[in-house]
Length: 631
Ligand code: FES
Image (cartoon, rainbow, N blue to C red; front, side):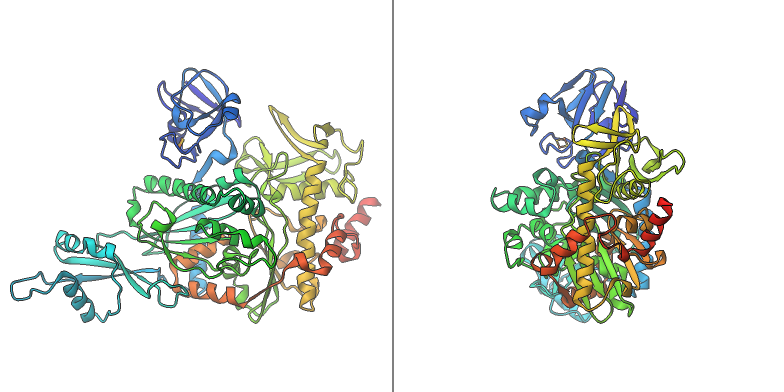
């Protein structure tokens, strides 16, 4: 039988097979935190056509059931099926792009002088078995052997000692002691702590690096012996169902008492990715012995179950900036429960460990040139500085470039229109779609291309409003005028409210950058390098972003695209002590500026709410282009 997706792909499904299994067999993964037991409710799909039998509906609401949503793990096909998979049910695991980037990441580590020194170290010991004459206790025997190797001061947890006798004898006294080396950590964690015992050489050592984004979660599985990226995966952060941005999540956590619910949602998302990676790589989850987390301040707080309420109340103070090392068991990860978890330090309430990770990966903190780092994710954080000083601010740009709040918006994944160009003679859009499939939506770089093309070809005015009659593709939609890119079962459009939303975001970013530079007595032309991180990857066309008025009008060769620097920084810190120390140092060195209380911000923001800006002299290259276009 045939299992067809609304987006076009089709797979086979056998009688009695669940939708989840049929998709998995075709390497199309859904979020399945409970492993298909029907309890987590994350594998939701909508049946558009066909007969089916559902064994249970688990957490699905009545409303969802009325709309024909089912749990993929509990539903079998009775005929050919046509289904729709919501974005938040999709899991992307181990794609080739992630693996390729892993190679670059290792080179980045080497270029930064980072050696492989994860939080968990080991030492092989060959203990003499006890005899009638050498009859000291097991722990004393272990301590004696460690002392002979020059290791003293290790702390032994109760859990470790409950298994010591068995582990020593099981391994015939030839053991590998794995211990956490937290010397130099800013935490309350003991400097050295034994974690567990394995046999000589038979231990495999893996770690996971996690980027907890407000919208997306990325997890890498890394070999701790050679630094190799073994697998990687990403999914939507399922906290999205409680709100798109950090503020609504904080409100849910505090006013609705939903902190634990939010915490579980993100941990389950990460566990889903881990589950699939260990299955694919035939790895024992117990062999994953350390982890690193990079996230914004709110995400890091929620992940550890810390009250985030003061983050949104003046004077905006988080509970923790520099996190202790806690255990994976405390977080609820399905890896070795003793694994120490390093959390990248935050700077302030709205500049978190993801930005510290980004600065680390960009190397701007080591170079004398004045650079701007921008992470255009859900929030829009910026850092200006060099090897002597670093200033930072958050711009509240909102999550539109990641697809939220945009009618056909989506992440930069398969099916997203990522590049758009208008044919100058026909004014018809020519676009490229990620994965060369038919379009199902439009991602951040596509939105920027679209608006700048609309503007330069006279389809919208300076305020971003459609000009009537300028294109037959402009129609009246349910949200007002919209431009239709594609229509065939699925409609991909950009509406006037979408454009307004994007213009607000770009104005916030531009105003934030101008103000931060003004604060240190510099202007935009002093920027020697602009590092751009975020979901745009390498697709963002700087010329188009300048035309939109989002990026400063600088020569193209000053822009460097870095992709997801949060996961890059998490990977660096997972592997290297030097990188962890540098991350701590960066967070200490950054001076945070609170834009929301800055007097000049509103003026800058309002002036930037035009295309490209009310003061066109700030955009000389666009001025020239517009002159040419009107000739
Ligand atoms: Fe958890 Fe289906 S309900 S995988």
